[in-house]
Length: 463
Image 1: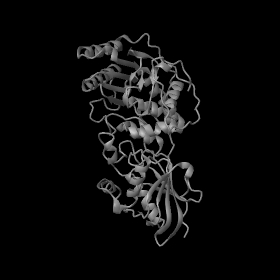
Image 2: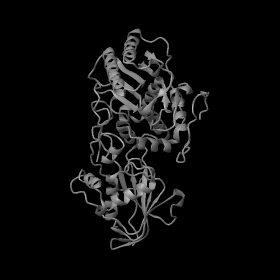
Image 3: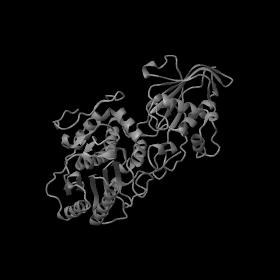
Image 4: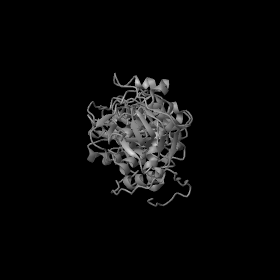
């Protein structure tokens, strides 16, 4: 089944992580053949060193020529006046002007800025760094492949032995996917397992990052007799007639590291995730911290995020400090110039694939997600962020005279007032550039892409 930009593809579990979501089914397509799947910089003496994580990998460093950031000098007088009025309004409301920063530009011209090269807490705008790095390290079409196999023999619906799942850190494996895997196992003649469910490697399930917890949830998803109300409600959203899987685990659910993958494993099927661009789109629409951190860890951790942002955007290393991939914590800091340059770097990264930033970041007024409740001009492509006393936003505004890129990092206790002021600023910038019904090519989502996961049969179980 295809899933377009207007179809939310997550399920209700994500509501425990983000505020809203309208769930819809994603049915796995059955394929016929097997799937194959620092820089060191002048350090700021006041900055905190970004930590590594136990899960972080060290993938090869992609090579590229950095973009050239615009100088903070010589802004456009008219746009600078708009930004100055915005700052004056915040000051009149009691906000500290030194805790605000703004950068506004076209592709090749500075329009306005205030403390535009100074880093401040970025909140979930940090996810744009995760987006850029994941695209660079993994590739736009990357799919995480979960392998399912057995140790033992199958006869009369019973697997005498263990069911083994080899995880690949798919950050969006959810109830619908477990149902699809369970139904595929039923079709392979497996309805009962005398042994254990063994999960090898890293598994996320329903946005639970702990592998042991995720494994227990997977066991529930495979067996309709154990479904929670949540699982049953998700089954109800699937295509009418979708069977309820019955894979009863007779033993226990246990986990093992990837290097303990059994040598005698008989692989039965693989389950490939939604493509990376769809994972990133859902991550940014709903500002999902679990997806963000999982992708950041897979791409190499916070050090890799900083490395790729600096290498691709050409910004001064002192304009970025990241501690994780989600933006949780005030230690994650960006300059607004860096945020704008990340959008432009993503644009350059996706162009050879026939994709745009609108394929990985929410389009206001079109896409479901956290921007739905905000009065923003339709078709702007934005990522927002919030922490205690922090509100940020960055992205592109289509206008008659081309795209206006902006980033705003706000600090202060009344985040609702900050968001309202951001919305007014965006509306003024749209008016300055000329409101248009035509969407700029770089802000136009790519239609008719297959964004669904896929299930591939490898072999039938040995009798």
